[in-house]
Structure formats: C-alpha cells, structure tokens
Image (cartoon, rainbow, N blue to C red):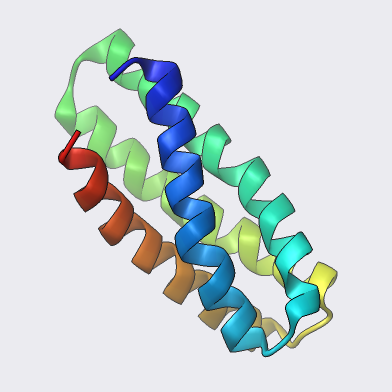
Length: 115
C-alpha cells in the first residue's frame, strides 16, 4: 500500500473507531464534530511524523520510541481539546482519549497489518 493510501486508511479507521466510542462516553451527538476535527488534526500528524522517521532511520526502535512519545502527546493534546470543545471535566476527557486512542491503536494497527 502506498504511503498516501496508508495515511487515508489509518485516518478512516481512526474516525470509525474513535468517534462512536467518544460520543457514547460523552453521551452526546454534539460531540461528533469536535471529535472528528480533533482526529483530523492529530491522526495525520502523528502518522506523517512516524512515516518520515522510519523512512529516514529504517529503525524499528526509533519508530517504536516515536510511537510511544507521539501517542502520549496525542493523549494529552486530545484530552485538552476534548475538554475545551466538548465542555466536559478534564478527568472525563482524559478517560475518553485513553479509551478511544487505545481502541484505535490496537484495532487500527491490527487491521492495517492485514494490508
């Protein structure tokens, strides 16, 4: 699969997985657009960074380290954005981002491995 196709598939999988879970936890359909916009920002950003780092280093150790650091940054960033845009308590926004990103990382990586 080409890098562009990989980015598109990764984004679509993330949106399909994270938006329904996040909206269910928030218990509001009005959360769908903010969750969509947040993921539209964070998912391509982390995936492009990971692709560039791997293509420059061809090191799985560097990739894994960047993935861990990147996911922590995404957890924190999305948690703050969800709190602000969905007007919910910080603790709930962090639970949402941990649950949605964990589900997305596990399911998305598993599905992408099939291609």
